[in-house]
Image (tube, rainbow, N blue to C red; front, side, top):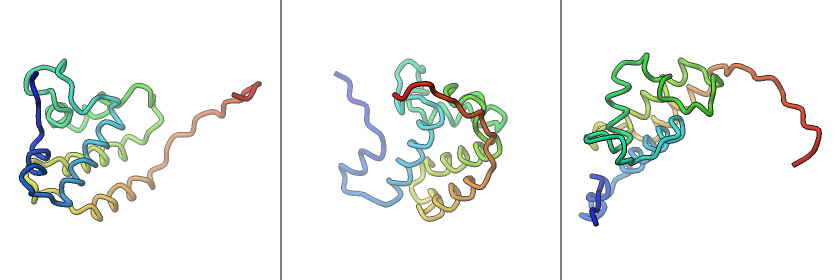
Length: 130
């Protein structure tokens, strides 16, 4: 059996725990939320198994970000706000622990994105309750 570990897990084992670990995890959460992909997938290929590594490659150009958004979201997201969320997540998963922002700064950036207007979708009418 092959066991794959993340640098964060190794830090936990060695006792080097920091609030920046939570920031990293939140960045991974944001990526999984908006892409609909697993945090780790061996099918992505060598060097791209971790979602964070794959997205760093894909998102190195801002115009690629809409291409990785979960298709279940459709077009129901503000493009500019989504780019800012991905930039925030990229900062959260910085390999250098000290380069990651404080969680209160991340919270502020995510709150700022919430002010972008989301396109409205037509209201669905149901004939029967579920």
